[in-house]
Amino acid sequence: MFRPRSPLGSKKNFRLATHVNMKFILSEFQDGVPVHVEGSYDAKTIDVEFPDMLYTAPILVSGEAEKSVGMLRFQGTLTATVKRICGKCLKEKNEALSFDFDWIFDLSGKDTVEPLENVRELLIVEHPLVHLCKASCRGLCPQCGIDLNEGACNCKKISYHASPVIIKKEKSKKERHHGTS
Ligand SMILES: [Zn+2]
Ligand SMILES: [Zn+2]
Image (tube, rainbow, N blue to C red; front, side, top):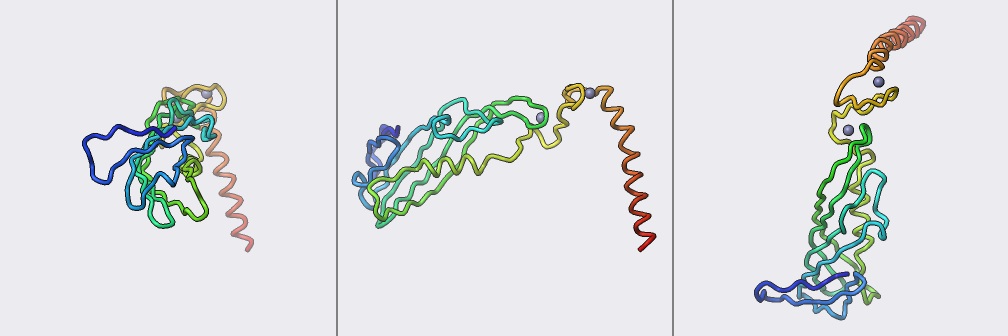
């Protein structure tokens, strides 16, 4: 729901608007008159959650919408709080997200404008393929499951000894290939 925000002082060219169902009803806008709007979205109902990024509060959108001939410009900020899960060590962390946006909607043949698709796109595009708690996260040992950021295990030693052998093999293959050509 977009809810009108109470005006603080009487700003010029400022007026309140009531928006239902998160839609900008264009007949409520006057050309060149910016309107402050605030709204919230439930991450679950707009399908923007990822298994490694869960929203812990409603997504808030606030800004100024201004209609002019044939278009509506909506500039503002989107904020959300999320619980992110590291793709390597599975540690959970709460984070605050904030994105500035500047959206322009083409109004041809429209009575209303619904920014939902823009909100979804912003949140989905900004989501990294793999979220890491830190770039240097060492993850979990695939054998015993210990968090390698917090300590080492014996399995790590085994793989450490094994890797130089693999490197050697690859090297000798390359050398042979080089020698015959
Ligand atoms: Zn991690
Ligand atoms: Zn281990």
